[in-house]
Length: 120
Image (cartoon, rainbow, N blue to C red; front, side, top):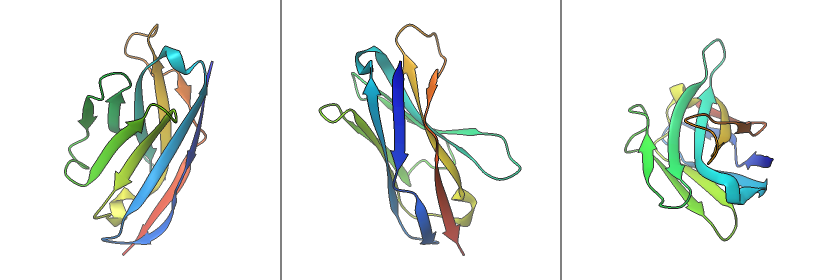
């Protein structure tokens, strides 16, 4: 099992920045990839960014490319999402998720989420 705890959400004005953190615990050696997802009210959950735990290879949704940066600190078992130039449409609950090395293309473990609200 892997436990994930997000933090760093809050209220920010458009154009501002926030950094989200996701601390992993438990069987972290089984983590292959960590991702950030978000869900706005009345909308489906959508992919935001991902990072491969070992190599650090990243991927982004087109909507956040150039504004958001995902990174990880393996010594702290923590992944970060630096969000710059925030827009009101970035308002959502942000979730961290882990794909273990035994799960093919599936994020199995999820955090509880952290609210990000961007005011115009």
